[in-house]
Length: 149
Ligand SMILES: [Zn+2]
Image (cartoon, rainbow, N blue to C red; front, top):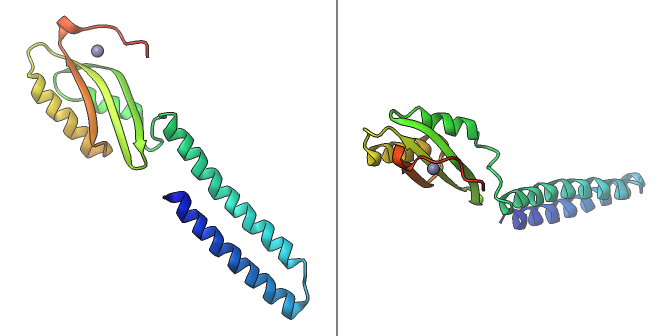
């Protein structure tokens, strides 16, 4: 969608550039205006294209969204009463504006797992706007070291 939008903008920019170059050449006879404006428009198109390509690459490689601080997410989850450890935390982008999170929470044996799960989902939604979470809640009998993924 963004690249289609940028395509239209760059077409419009090209047309405006041609009109401006035409006016300058017609009234002032300054013919070098045409190549100069063409180069400027090309550079603007290249710059926006690079943005789209690098963003797409980041999403396809399932990189952590640049707007989200992993450490802050971990701290938020750890601050919930009863959470002893957060591990195997992954955050990635499914598509523009739709992020996904998965993690394991080690909780106190005496705590209600459903209650902690509910709080975790709410905090992640409210503070980081991640609407799709997959959280595995573990107690001491399920405790394990980080998965090597
Ligand atoms: Zn685990």
